[in-house]
Length: 224
Image (cartoon, rainbow, N blue to C red):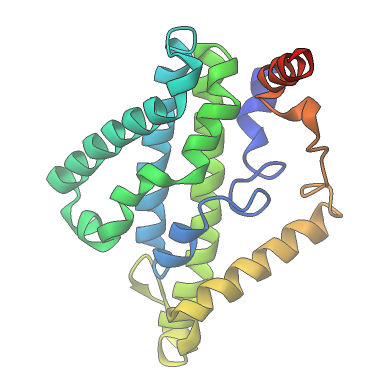
């Protein structure tokens, strides 16, 4: 893949939230305001970038049998670092994100990119992939939050929007509003791309990262 393609891949074609449906917990939980969405997106991107870089650098060092717990330890370390930075320099966002900030550790997006991309590619490509996927994740959260905050609170980034401020739709400020906004945006993406963004892929053995190992085990079983 060309570097530009890697960078733009996460925006629409493989958007983590709108196409791959990863990281839906923060996408629904912290998108009541646009500022929270941007804060979560930037924090997740920072963790994703750090994790991808380290996994790529250590991909030939980490033993295959312990790579999953190793990834979790690495991701948890970066989450702790990001949390400390937010607590020191953006305390209001740190408080708003609450428990969902440490839960970045188990975000499927970060673990998935480490497993499926960073451990198979070089440092530069892995860093570019992290930036692209992080940007797509942030934009998806911002789109959901913008709909919810504008319609549910009559404001955007905390700034009141005249007529909408006096005519809000309360459901968008509540949990069901997150599902409605997410479904609406996914429908727009599917319509605009004519379904190509979420095109069905082959999930057979050839696309599995453990295919080689599995094949060896099957051969050993046959010999036995």
